[in-house]
Amino acid sequence: MVLAALGDDDLAAAAQRVIETRAQLPDRMVFWPPFLGSFYGVAAVVKAAAGAGELVQGRDWVPADDVYQHSSFCVAQAIVAGRAGDGERAAALFEDGDAGLAAVPAVRALYRRYGGEAAIRDGWGDPAPWLAEAEVYLERRGNEKLARACRSLLRLAGTSPRRRRGPAADHRYAGLELTTREADVLSLLAEGLTNKAIAARLYLSPRTVEKHVERILTKTGQANRTALAAFAVERDTDSPTT
Image 1 (spheres, helix red, strand yellow):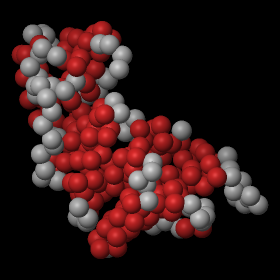
Image 2 (image 1 turned 30 degrees about the vertical axis):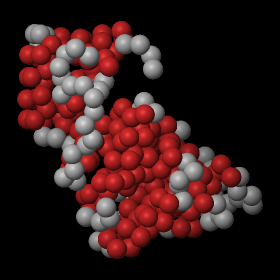
Image 3 (image 1 turned 135 degrees about the horizontal axis):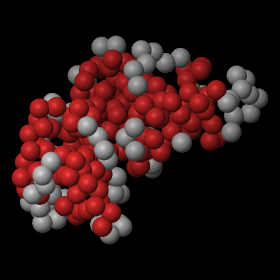
Image 4 (image 1 turned 120 degrees about the vertical axis):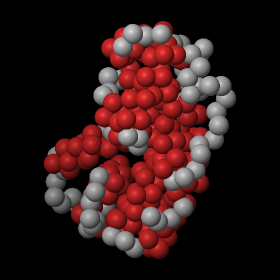
């Protein structure tokens, strides 16, 4: 599902699922089921976040008197407008779409994560408050990948993420005296990511990631990166399910 891929902070997979789903849909339908309208709304946001230069309403969105669909398309159009340099329109569209998603906080947090990234990149709106609220919500829901992405974007926006209790909020690394950023790096090492991939995920330079890995090696007493990755996976496996 598209939303599941976004929830895993995998925009490329979400975009691919949009393509696959669209290929199975007929070009014309007499009746549009509600779920299909919702799909087109999310698909528009994915297409915009993935780099679309424009959205054609008749093809990218099913017009309907539905707040969720309307809000999704507003967010998508905001990202496209910002990319085109129309920051004022982008900010207005995003505000309209975001307000309409109050009843669906999980989707709102997803859109704030991707809308916030676009706003920082293209210089429109006020993404820091959106990202800060999204980070709190996502962390409480246990989605550490998206919460981590929001924290990284907040740093890009020049705002320090809220301070979390303890040297590292991730319970898997309790007692290791890791910083929040080091815990983020170690979590991604456990997923098998390279330094370059970790750098891209956390919006850091590969050299900065390398320095973090060096400090984590020292703190954990592991001999090398391979041993450290195995250590991280073991900690993940041994941690209680939340």
